[in-house]
Length: 343
Image (cartoon, rainbow, N blue to C red):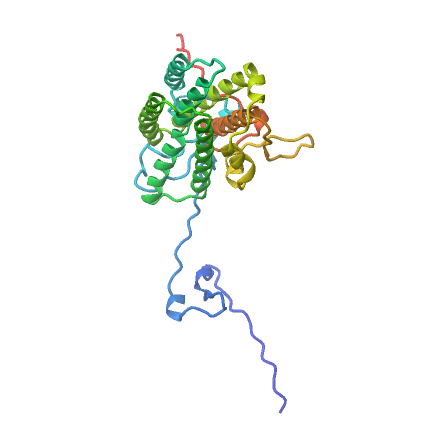
């Protein structure tokens, strides 16, 4: 007899029956061999979607942060704070009560420290200027180390998110960039005096613990401190380049600057440039420094400070490193105080 064809029909489900879970299917190894049936029969664990810092969900006209995880759940500590839709529409120019950022107090702190450094190290066009920059760079790199310290601690206690890892990589690249600024100033003789070294290291040690405490309580407040520092650094280097261009163009490039800006793999350099500028064709372009004299070195150091400033502005105002493009980034401004309503 001729063999009869056998047809298989798909099993039908009742109207109210739940579809089979995808996790019940036999998972495969790389070689295609199924796992033991005992493991296959085990119910699949529910998959949780993690929210990255800065990726916030809108509800009823306000943007609310995702749920907290780890030992700080239910607290007001290191949770990523939401920003209002109205503030996003304004371009994030204001920060107020919702962000727990006391902009005026931050400005007083940073301006006081900066004025002390300016008084002790006036720019005169001599080698002592490099001592001033050595002190500035020693202090300026501390906040990124403080951010990483708190983030590593959170990871240790179980906090997980894709955005957290990306932000940690960026802060590490920023710290590495500031380290090379410091090494450049050291090769120029900025750390030749034990008095300068002691002052810079003492300030950095105290500032590290201050930023760590602030960052643990309010991330926007800690980022705003660094925004102010980077703005001062940019203006300082820009003024130095303008007033001493001829002198700097007659001086050679330090070897450490050539190694960092030219010879090294640009991955770390590109990592901290989160808010890229557009070229003439409208495409985002990567910075590729060219060094011929010491003047070019300081131009790149100045531009690095601006890159940090743009990233920090976005973090303070939007809790997102790439919230808006470079041409729209502005310094964080305090939110106008509410006027008391008159009867």
